[in-house]
Image 1 (spheres, rainbow, N blue to C red):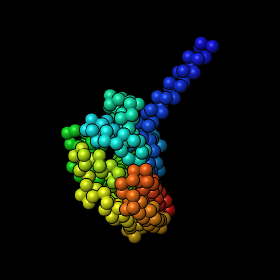
Image 2: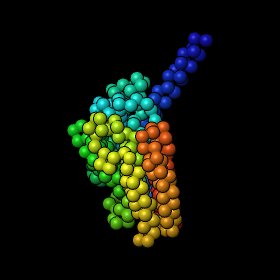
Image 3: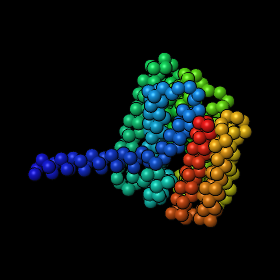
Length: 312
């Protein structure tokens, strides 16, 4: 009986640990990096190398998760996440530190562990490709992800977070997926294909900056919503969302993707719904989670349409 109780306690502890890591990592947001990476693989016109693809995916996902966790750590230290300790799931961070579930050291160590995993996968890929560009590029992207909120740069505090994230989760990931197959940097087609996903990831940030604005303003965090104000944030959201949808559809006009890329225009529907929520309920936190859901859906529509387009 004693051994059974011990094993049961061990399993409970293991599951609790896994659940904590998953919550701290904010796993649902990995679609922001996974879908652009799949787009880059789909755009490759040769035969995919499974090992190269898997290692490249490990680099991308681990770097993304490292940045996610580092973001919570840095925003806790700056005080921005302490202004509202309610966990909303889509914005404001995980709130695990603020609720006393984990401390800042746990987040820093987890972020470092993900970062080391990303660099390890990059080193293995570099050996296979015989290219020093892989660890250099992976290290630069990892550092940029940390610099989004961490000192000394804290780019998201200087209205530079939106373009940084658009670049990292658009062109950088699509080019990375193609590089691990070709061993060379892609050209204009990759830039065109990555524009829509990049804009839509920036759109997710802008959407979440509306409910985050009070805490951001109190902590000196300057975002694009800080420029237009949360009441008019829906306008910026609508313009950026339509631009992302049009960028996806434009790849068909440029002959970079097949007709399914035109389905990117369908993203306008969830963008419009999210913008309407932002306009009517800009200061209602629970309702604004609806806007976040629709915005994430719009990103998925653009990415999946482009994936279908390059496969046609």
